[in-house]
Length: 75
Image 1 (tube, helix red, strand yellow):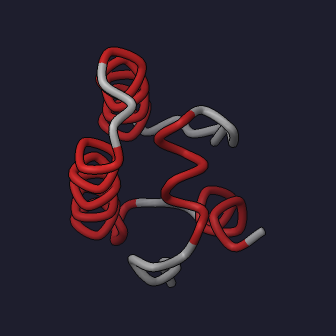
Image 2 (cartoon, rainbow, N blue to C red):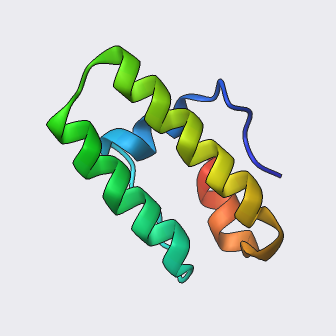
Image 3 (cartoon, helix red, strand yellow):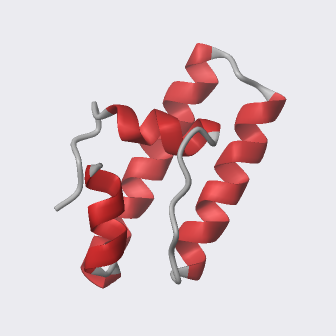
């Protein structure tokens, strides 16, 4: 189960403070792109947009994420 949208993990993933090891290409591309977009514009409003987008993609990908990826999000 994914952490809630309010979980600090999403900000950590977007800012690059936290790495996620995944074999899912969509997830890896999303995180790479989100981090680039955050570096170009680290404003709070952009960060919130990127967090929401990241969460929504993870929510969509949740059925195909494996337990290892989900466990990484929980810690």
